[in-house]
Image (cartoon, rainbow, N blue to C red; front, side, top):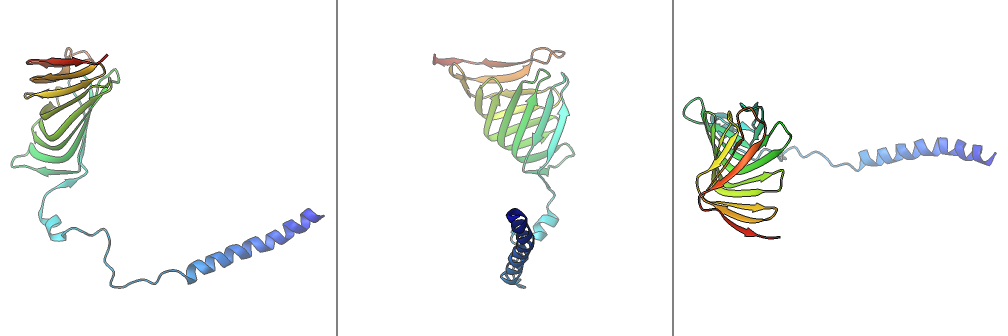
Length: 192
């Protein structure tokens, strides 16, 4: 009997409390400011209209050996010809058929056909725990290769390496595995 009285009172009090809370929200809400600016309009609209660019571009494809390639950036600007351009804050993922992946990031990327020159803080991280940094990488979107012609610094699970050149390429055109080839005066500091 007591429980049914409590339920009966709660059926009346709870909706009235909810109505009172909603009324307070509407009465104490802010008044609109007619002269307020839109907070996210910090760019010059005329500059946006005159300049050719794509924000947040994404490219996804498959290399000749079947590896998946995904490239994203914050902005892409076309170049002089049809197959040229630059990409800002570029991130590339190369995923082989066996599931192993390499993540590459750079400040800028210059595109010429299927070749991309990655510059400004280039870094590659593999699924095996290898971290490779270099001043510049050259990537091929069709072959699924990545190369550095200048000195590279490598942090491997077993120590630190430096080399004059580096290439990440498929073992064979029909095989999904990739090999990281370091050459040109390779030095290793072993850390057991």
